[in-house]
Length: 94
Image (cartoon, rainbow, N blue to C red):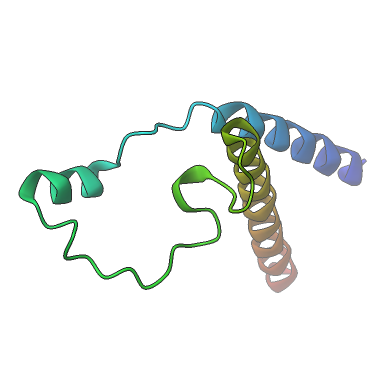
């Protein structure tokens, strides 16, 4: 029964991640906006772009597909991290 709930939760999470990824804003976040307003975005040093910069997946030209794939991968990664943390905490608690 527990595995069935976990699978249902994963499916719902994936659906929510895919659906919400298409609503990702193309506008900069608050920190980027302040940097743009004060004119120091060109001075920034970029150490790492991340795996999916600006909610896209590198190498995929189709914007909708890239954003959806980024949402899917982000959702699965978050789910796995939270599941791993839960597994550790429950095991420690016993």
